[in-house]
Length: 268
Image (cartoon, rainbow, N blue to C red; front, side, top):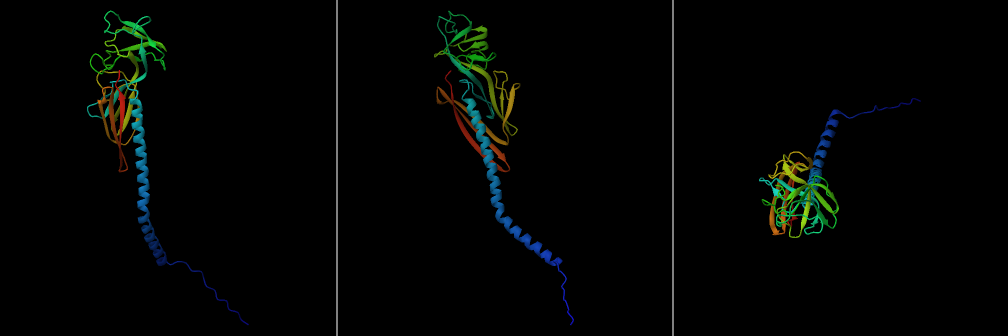
């Protein structure tokens, strides 16, 4: 008895079949891409907007926090409304105006003479550092302008209850409430070349520097496509001013604009 075994050799895909599979897969992938492209792009756009919003909000809050420490009547804006400067205070208090003790003398009391040391009523915390400036009754006008130095003096030494100036001084005006402030540095926030930068530690100047020279600087925000600072010293009342800030950030064709207002005390 003869037995015949029929065998079939294995068979693969033909070239035509492979091409058809590739074409069909490409069509399906293209159709899927059309449906998922918009949600994916929307996710990336949302992430970009969220990051820009967070950066802008952080920058504006940082400026606002510094402005609350500004010396009364020291805020000033450049002509292009892209730079804001103010004198930052570190402490303050009330000075002794009548004996006994070391008094702070002013021109309002012609019988008094210049003095180098005065007592602080109460205590200061923190204690001013050597090189800081003590300012009395800053009105931001000629004769009572801390930028000009007419109503300020350099501190050479201080304790919690007294201040000694580098030279004896008779201040031009007496503060009605016998208040003084201590300034440690001018501060500038400036928008230029797509960035927002903070400057500090440079010399106080009568004219607003743009940009400040010397001192230190730190990058606050990038991708800045617009920036606007305005200041109205009498927006609220004679005791408070209003700083308005607007910043615009742009990245990957996404733009966010944030607006923030800060009240500043103008009581010297």
